[in-house]
Image (cartoon, rainbow, N blue to C red; front, side):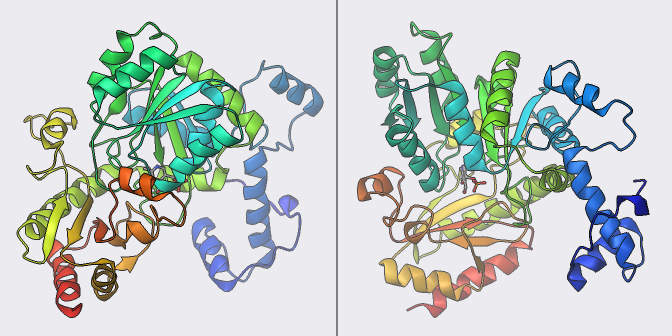
Length: 426
Ligand SMILES: Cc1ncc(COP(=O)(O)O)c(C=O)c1O
């Protein structure tokens, strides 16, 4: 990477662990403090693309500001690492228009601010992750949007509200968090196309729950997709990020402009990390999906379990839709139904919490990691502490629900832990 002692800007204080990591990454002596500092400074410089060899730096920046040059010059605007991540993500959805953001919620905020203005109506599925719901509610109370939450599967309600309000966009989570309910994107698109506002109203899909190798909402008719990259794309519960993709150049340009003005861009180092992890996404989610199907089938026949919510099981209300809309391989087989499942146990909230705590599975609010994660949505992601009881109910969340994000461990090991938890809790 061409580091030199000239790039030493300061004596960076580093932990031993960071020293080891940097030393490995850049093949330098971990005790060479000056070399380590040079690396840190160079990484920071990369983020803001400072080029010490530029002969006319003022002229160079002037051209960047006048949009005559397309090179990254400031990390909030864009970074080389971010562009790399965006290009790779875009490829997986057959587009060159992708935008990285600092988190999934930043991606949603960017869409709200980029595609609507004060006074506009937004139609939003009521099957929504708790923080996303609050994000939309804030856009109502602070930014003056009118937000109407609609039952994901009630097409006459969508149709009526589209006709009545001519919304700036309609927004669905598909599959939804936590019950993996799937939106019928083709049907929603038909409703939009037959409305009198079809050119203006955009269809936005948050597909965090089922990433690209499994599900491609842009190909089904969505105008914009977004994912919380914090989840499957990172796959390690380390980096926070969001990513948006569209096939519409004008939408992309507008979102790019707003991302810069509002400061929603991802930092270069996180983007770099996400683009590395993106390379293993296909293999990871396919294997995780197979594991999840095995576990869902087991739970489905378990006497202590009331109901299992997994798109790959025929009892899931959108199983047939998933069969149609999820990606197929060359032999026309579904690649996978995803690795997110939820289930209700036979018992009250206290019993459910005891079951969850006894499983010896990592309890987190994250998902999509290579390591299996357990969540109790009613006390965290969809808690009445953050949402009204009616909103919790609308998301389909009940006190005896547990959510599992299945990882890469052998399914028998995960089943052993689940079985242990169900036996221990009395
Ligand atoms: C479906 C969905 N969308 C958006 C988000 C928000 O993503 P982030 O935590 O990266 O802001 C989450 C987070 O769990 C989510 O599950």
